[in-house]
Image (cartoon, rainbow, N blue to C red; front, top):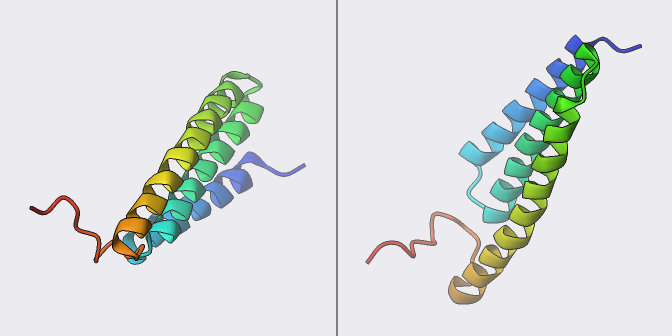
Length: 100
């Protein structure tokens, strides 16, 4: 049986990797994948603590987070494809649509 602290350590490591990827990378697709990695790290923590305390609330929250993540994937990829068609790049430094 794996202790809950190990699940939380893996979750924290995955979350830190995701934050690092968002802060360091400039490719929109990589940033998008790092955000998904952070969501999955939070899901792992929710499930681990739900199992530790013997309650179902954490798993219910994970279900809703996964539903929001699926919607985010659909909308986010559509935005990235639209940006690529207009600017022919996915580099976030070169995409400056909000500037006049």
